[in-house]
Amino acid sequence: MIEVNNLVKRYGDHTAVDHLSFKIEKGKIYGFLGPNGAGKSTTMNIITGYIASTEGTVSIDGHDILEEPEKAKKCIGYLPEQPPLYFDMTVLEYMRFAADLKKIPKDKKNEMIEEVMDTVKITDMKNRLIKNLSKGYRQRVGLAQAILGYPEVIILDEPTVGLDPKQIIEIRDLIKNLKQKHTVILSSHILSEVSAVCDYVLIISHGKLVASDTPENLSKLAAGSNNLSLVVKGDKEKIRILLGEISGVRDISIEGSGEEGEWNVKLTTEEHTDIREDVFFKMAENRYPILEMQSKKVSLEEIFLELTEDGAGQKKEKDAEQESDDKEGGES
Amino acid sequence: MTAIYKRELRSYLTSMIGYIFIFFILLLTGIYFSAYQLGAAYPKFEYTLSALTFVFLISVPILTMRILAEERKQKTDQLLLTSPVSVEKIVMGKYLALVTIFAIPMAIICFYPLLMTKFGTVSLGMAYTAILGFFLLGCANLAIGVFISSLTESQVIAAVLTFILLFAFYMMNGISSFFSEGALSTCITFGLLILAAAIIIYTMIKNLLISAVVCVAGEAVLAVLYIVNSEFFAGGIQKVLQVFNISGHFDNFANGIFDIKGVVYFLSVVAVCVFLTIQSIVKRRWN
Image (cartoon, rainbow over all chains, first blue to last red; front, side, top):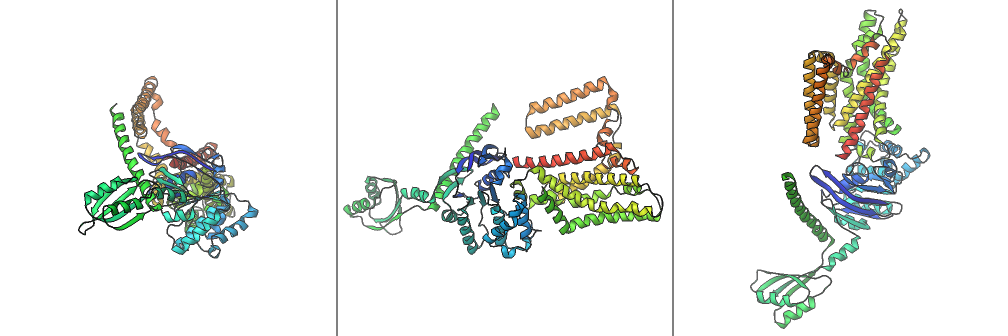
């Protein structure tokens, strides 16, 4: 449906999107996840043809966005971060204008506008000036504009920002319903939103794709690596040696817990290994009582943080490399 | 294109701005008409129009300042540029809406010469030639306003810049008389301009070699031309500046002459400005 190939966008020295490639398939909801400034909006703006990429291509349903812009844009409905509304128009006027822009045939136009306004529940507001609408309703009018004409792909940039919780749930349900007829791409920096709505998650950090999978698989990936935290009574160094003997232990950190002779131990284990029993018997053999033992599974939230921070680390290294390259280039 | 045209038209006619523009043009035309035609009983309507060319300095910036600048500020250009409508059609739709607004007072002005025929002999041919010329002059000024509006996202800056530019063009006769008509001084001025152009090229592409080549080649051509035929340069600055003397091209119309050259000139200004507007919008996408 959408193919993004090696997309690069540079603003002067700053690289907003860095060699991004992915494919979007029909009939699914895709989530772009990333911290603020990760390049989500830029990528969406490039896919929709609002800005041009420095390098790379985007093709929508086989039409290149730069070579056949009108055909490609016809397949897309776009709700940018700030809904593109004309404040001097009423909702109905605006919808008619959007329908004309999208070249919807005259005989279907009114019917389709009614239908879409019904879907996003703005029919009651149709004769109000957009400037008098609340933020939530403005967002819905923007959404209605994106759905209008039933394009094959609907791209929503942070569709729930600034809405109250009830509205957020309504909009999410709406997006889920869109799946039946459309492919949806939405961006968000809120993890729970993406995992609640999307079938597939693309995590972007510093303009790079750091992970792409279903939310379930991402959770599994995270569950593989476990953390075990213990409170053990005994000799610090001895505990360290004993725990080190257990196979599957990757990392041990021991800190004082505040109580005399009690130690907070943090164990990182290899993926898919359960060492809780081994730990228990090892400590029991040496008569070091375990006061507490807790197994921590990594949440999607933590993967997100981990992945995006890794991205930052790589980025810094790369910048340093680039700088040294630049210097060399300058000297030669 | 029709969607954008209709929206712009409605937007101007549901807000104050369109009416202020129409009111302003009609008010000043009315004042001059009553002074020259009704008061002094002067039969030439062309004369009134030629005294009125300054109305565009104030009315055009008011009308054109928001046309593209506001879209950018409100980010509504995202809707236009991501919809299946080409940039050419967006700009043309908007420009034609402006021309339509301007055609409203012009249509009313068309009745004035008819009114005068009630009281004496009036050369309607000359009067309507002048009205046509005046209309084309307005269209050219509007096109400049549209281009300036595409450069910035602030309406105030767009209005001020448009005013300054139109004012400079309006005063072009005076400005060109500041420069000497001598061949040597003209040649030196052009030489400095080439140097400035080379510096601008350097700041844009950061390539010393290319800008140096441009500079040296340009200066060499100038020097050769000057040595071969120094008279070629006499009055050169004035000739170049005359291209920007937009209201000056109305003079023939104001004398009741249907000036084909003038028509071509005004239409060229419109075409160039519309082209530049399209380019400035397209270019911004690549930044």
